Length: 289
View (tube, rainbow, N blue to C red):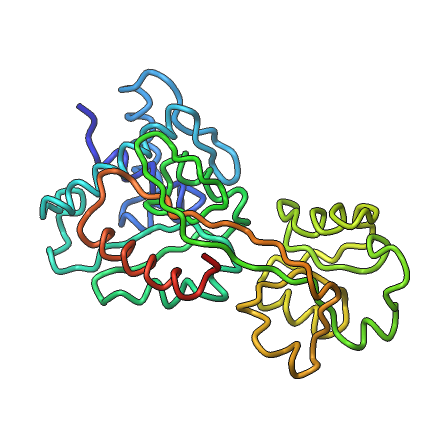
């Protein structure tokens, strides 16, 4: 049987992106954290981490972390707390949740406001890649554009974020709209964000050639407002900026609907069930159904 302190060390090293920070989180020395990983590897008979910067889970490490997440869920559901014996039963449950930045900038904060018995650690990435965190067992909940459930988990559709192609009046005055938009300055969230490419392909424009990468939803919006480039923004984030003339809808009849899904482990605790149900009620109001 595996000592769950060893799995807790593995989880901490992955979440903290290194042995030193993980040791501080666990209130042990760095050498003790290293010993726990060596002991875990001795038990399973193969490496669980690639010692890179930051450390990377092996396939076996991913399976072990997936197992730990489900054990945590089951213990909470049973009213147990053996993994962290120093904490009382009334301590908030820490939820690691992977989400896209645009959800975090729009509807998600309201969805997370379900009570004072949860603490959140958010992993923020493009919605097209967040599911890898669930597959690796790094998170308890995942919001993704991928609707295929991972092994041991379930998935429920939330609705869609509706994106519009917008630019500032300053940008339109400078560049006009009579040329191939693929040649003009645009904003893209990061290398995983392909909404801009989808838009340009839908209108037979060339692939984007002049890209500003803005991996921050609020910064992205401010970049568009400043005239740095045009881009795709969620309608929830645009609000009344088009009506006020601060943004111009470059293609009034065009939208991209990005579906979002809530992924969760089958061993769902009562707290996470309440969170999921509250998130679904908020999504039903805020997102395109």
